[in-house]
Each structure stands twice: as C-alpha cells, then as structure tokens.
Length: 60
Image 1 (tube, rainbow, N blue to C red):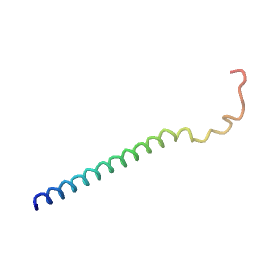
Image 2 (image 1 turned 30 degrees about the vertical axis):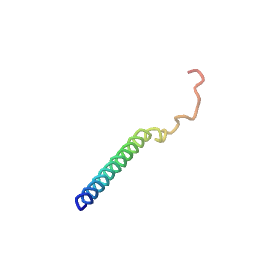
Image 3 (image 1 turned 90 degrees about the vertical axis):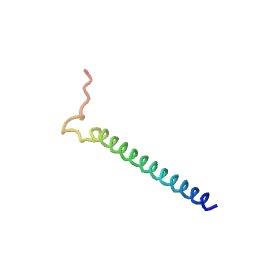
Image 4 (image 1 turned 90 degrees about the horizontal axis):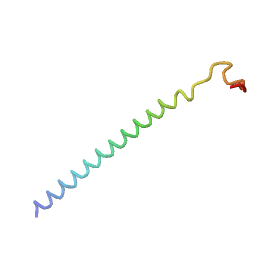
C-alpha cells in the first residue's frame, strides 16, 4: 500500500512539473510573438517626414 501511494505521489509530482514546463514554454512563445509583432509594426507607426502625404499626385 505504501508503494502504491508513493508511486501515485511521484506520478502526480511528475505531471505537475511537466505542466509547469509546458506553461513556461507557452508564455515564452507568446512573449516572443508579441516582440516580433512590435518589431514588425514599429515602422508602420513611424511619423512621416514633414510634407510627405500632404498632397495627392493624380498623375501617378
């Protein structure tokens, strides 16, 4: 009986550790994706130089 309890506790602890590692990996992936999006969107949010975008070139 003691062996069954000990093995059950070991299995539960192992599952808990495995789940903690999976959560840490998902969080890290999310952080990396967020950083990538920020990096890709940064040029799109840049301020235009003075005079650019104020007139429409209809001959283009």
